[in-house]
Length: 192
Image (cartoon, rainbow, N blue to C red; front, side):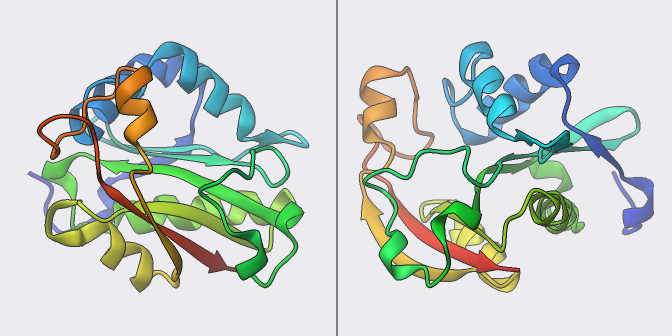
C-alpha cells in the first residue's frame, strides 16, 4: 500500500505500448467493454495535436495505477450529448476529458487530480481554454462528480442514458445497471 506520499507516484505520456494495460485497468474500473484496442487507438489519436500528447499515465512500483484519456480541441465530435450554446467559450477551443481512471486501491492519493492537471497543461498547449467531460453520476458515492467539481468543473446539463448505445451496440457492460445502461451523465465544463 502506498504511504500517503504522492511523490512515490510517477507520471508520463500515454503511449501505444501502454494500450494492453490501459484496456485491462479501464475495463476493471469502468466496466467490461469500456475500452478495446480499436477505440483506444482512436482515442489516442484524438489526443494528439501539434506534436503534443494530451493522454497521461500514472505509475507506482512499476505498475500502472491510473490514466487520463483526453481529446485535443477541435479533434472530437460535438454530438447530442454536448450543449456548446451553454458553455460560454468557443467550442473549437474546448478539449474533451474522455476518461480519468485510477485503480481503486490507489484512489485518494491525488492521482486523479494530478492526471487532470497534466491534461489541462497539454490541452492549453494545444490551444484549449476549457475542457468538457461527461461525469458518471452513478460512480460509487458520486465520487466522480465530487472530484470534477472540486477541480473547478461546473455542471452544464444532465443527460440520461448517455452510455445506453455503447451498452446496446458496442459491448459495454455497465458495472451498476442490471441490464442495459441507464446511467445519467453530467455534462461539466472546466475553464482554464
